[in-house]
Length: 191
Figure 1: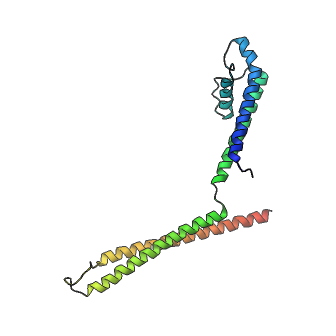
Figure 2: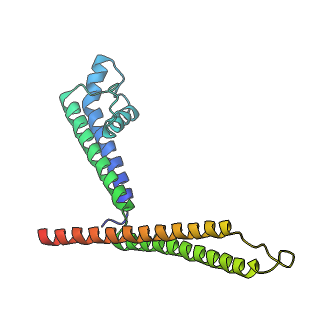
Figure 3: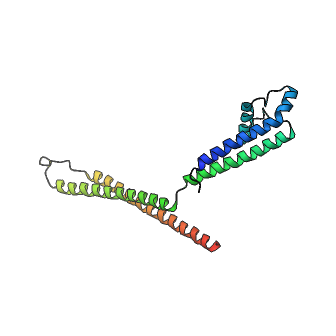
């Protein structure tokens, strides 16, 4: 694997742009001098035309008129399309998660959901215990707020939602593991 892949693509595209610009200018300049046009009179104008074609934009404002110039511009466009597709595929590969990173990410999400379940269970337990402790005392003697049955029920409902989320997360991770195993099995069978 090339260590500096993006630098390599940048250098190759810059050098190929310079090469195509110089060679197209060599073939087009005498024609345009004879006609009196200024399309390929400077290397900057030629570089611009090659860049526009290599990036597959192709405005059409400047185009070569000689046979070799047209052939070179077509070749430059093909090289540009190849370089753009290579760059896009390198970016896509760079953004893909490797198998161990996918597993770590799913485990982190699972632990986060489990932590939420534990947190909600602790809140529910503390609120319920406080209610049971305080409900026997007269209101004037109570030092803390005595949670109502509705408050305890709301916390219990949130806890149950967290449990449902956790179960869904576990099921989703299991389904992903099963689909990876199936894909790997198919790849082994094909090879």
